Length: 178
Image (cartoon, rainbow, N blue to C red; front, top):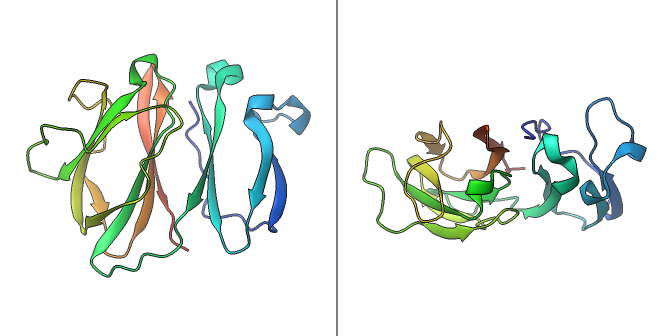
């Protein structure tokens, strides 16, 4: 699975920008068509581009392009967006439970039936520590380790991306604030 991210944002000019993702030590000519495209970037916006899928099956991978929130107007809440980018067959769709650390998982998922390539949009959460359980559809057991102490800061803006395949799942946490 793809598990690396850039350190912050890369500045590029507004307009149509061609993008392509390739394996390490490959050239742009080696890019798969499903991991290439033209993005229409607007001045003053920020974007996250995700290669979703499995490095062992690049022909089935896909690009996910998201427009990021640049500022949080709340001094007490943090904004969190969750993205399903895992290629695990059992993880399509997933149910996502978000709840305060040390409390009981809610009976109903916070976000139900999230499919590969989909995001939840930004959700405001009061500053605190949260458990995020990403479970196979119709189940409640967390499939991704290390998501039981997610700190949401007042005024923060974050994206959490579920990545991996059938042999291992993990999460990438990004700071979207500019």
